[in-house]
Image (tube, rainbow, N blue to C red; front, side):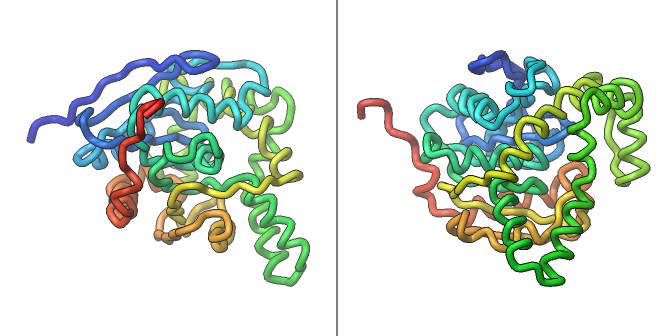
Length: 306
């Protein structure tokens, strides 16, 4: 079997250059992969190989990670700027046809913003999310647990607050950056192996990816949780739920039908890093979801003025 073609290039975003990787036949419909924290686009390598047998697959380094530009100001990591980056990527790689969006961890958090942004309606054919809730949906969920403080609701809320321990750490000034650059970053593959049983290759930008990415949390988490907005998806949504996720509770994705018409939820016996540990299983779940969608969802966009 001939190797799957791949290429690396840059897309000019509104604030800087974004590093992009492409796998597969450029004539095929596009699947866009959005990585989480503290990863970069290389976390998708194995998943992309499986998906690219049928699709053109695009993965890009989110701002602050990998080979993309690296803002230093906290406000430059707000969801609106991340949405602008995603829009620049899809305008470059699929200007005439909607894309299938797939995301993990913080990639999923920001991708909920994309799929609920009215200006992107018609640009996204489907969205598969894993281990990253919409912050606004989570804000509403927390209010609901407190509004009806039954033992079950309080237990669920407490469990998620414990799982989110790192979020509080990331809001400390300077400490997370120092840890990433001098302790966590140089030892990240070893920590992943010890704590999560995950084998990853060392990445040259790992320390900087982690240090820069804490601004994703600082710029977005508490504003959305305290003042949650109404965010309704304009494309079909599938949420893959790893039941052994140490960071995201399955309860967060149980009742999302009001936010995502046609919502599909799939529980999988896996951990948070399913995209690295079980890339084929993850890719198969994505393909199965796309396959059951109506063909009309992926129809080409009309040219301006048509």
